[in-house]
Amino acid sequence: MIKDYYKTIKKMRIEKKLSQANIAEKIGISRTSYLAFEQGKTELNLTEAIKLADVFGISLEEIKTGLKPDYEKYKQMILAFLRSDAAGSNGKITKTKLAKLLYLSDFAWFYKQLESMSGLSYRKMQYGPVPDSYFRAIDEMFEDGLIDIDTISKDGAFLIFQTETGKFEKLSALESNEKSLIKKIAKKWKDRNTQEIVKFTHSQLPYLICEDNEIIPYGLITQENPDHVY
Image 1 (cartoon, rainbow, N blue to C red):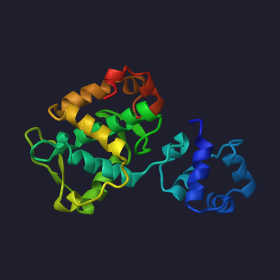
Image 2: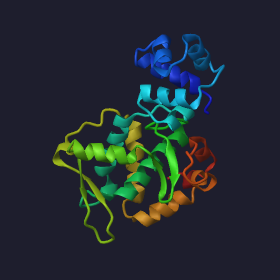
Image 3: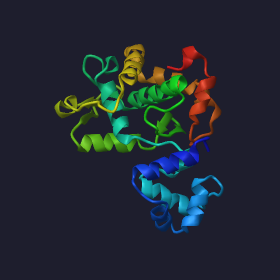
Image 4: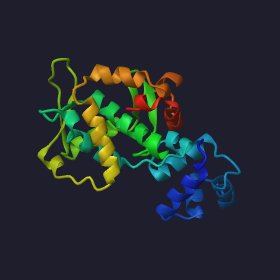
């Protein structure tokens, strides 16, 4: 668990305007026991941790790592890449390449700022690092009419592109320096295909060190060569 794990949980509780007694009741423990947990003196069992994750609407892994996911910001990151050089002349990016661009932006931001841009946890999967909520975000954005998916391409890949509605969506959650980093990453990878970016992310230290299906600690990227961050 990260250093500020308990501080993060407390901050999330306060932001939701929930008391310690509220949380304790929801996860089935006494207020005293929850207070001890929030102070870092005790741990929750698996059942209690799952209930706590449900209260905050995040995954169990995010509870364990202490990351605070911002799904709306993550969706805006998706739109930012779809509006970038990486989308090319047709405005489309393969679903796999888009996932890798998002990973690079999150981990490159951590490399510079020691915090994730989106706050999401990335898992080591066969085709590269990806958060569990990536597919959920794509589905929700499709249902909301912000993006569309083209299933016809030369290699059979799914192509993601923003709709007319999506083009008017504001990227208010992204700071100017975050948008700047996204543009730099997009520019670097605009003429590179999906397999090239997959090969690149697979060769990075965070992916190489972790076991299959394991959550990738952000801190590993700080050990990477600066020229190999994105």
